[in-house]
Image (cartoon, rainbow, N blue to C red; front, side, top):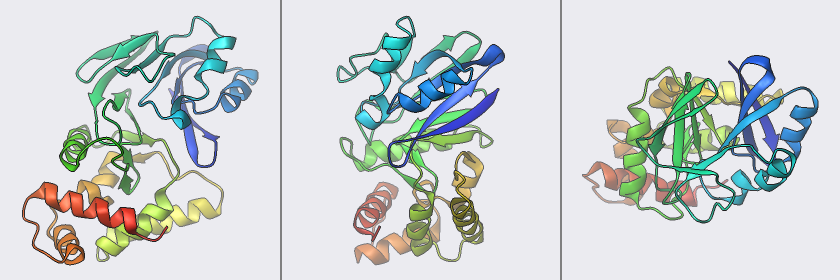
Length: 254
């Protein structure tokens, strides 16, 4: 299977996962144009997967359905996504043509956020980013940490296909938290080189994120100590470490 990121809006990615005969799954089409251009070059959409209700992830669906009215649209159980043809929740498995995916509930960024993993890929929307995680618009730190724990427990060779190109800015924060992490230093330098060349920094592997991403490393002594120093108090529980990291990131210079 062939994976292709399509740039959309200011910093979004729409993901295409192509199988045989040019048929492809379309993940989180925030706008229709990039998908329609791919179709003009021979891609035939087989279905749409949506991770959450934000418009920069679903805004292109009506125009795609106008072009392909019978296209299945699999989305979270959330009435804010009116274009869904099937609602799915964590713990379910889904099938479209020859594709098979497991659905993971990842609330935190939104309460109904889901991720899809299968065929060596993890489509995680705005729950997990390379070197970061999503803002908690609707969930709690406990929700979000539980979601990241579920993702961290998946096979570490999965390709992490997130919804935005945030790696370089996330790297600046991660290095402030964990400056002695040599794997993080290498990843940061690699990401800068890739962006300077106009290349996407994702997908990355879950193994690389487990080694570098501070939000997946709340149990690492160096990360916990840095969060406590920033908070100015002992934190103790790992959810308190995560909450401090997320507050720190929310105030970190862009």
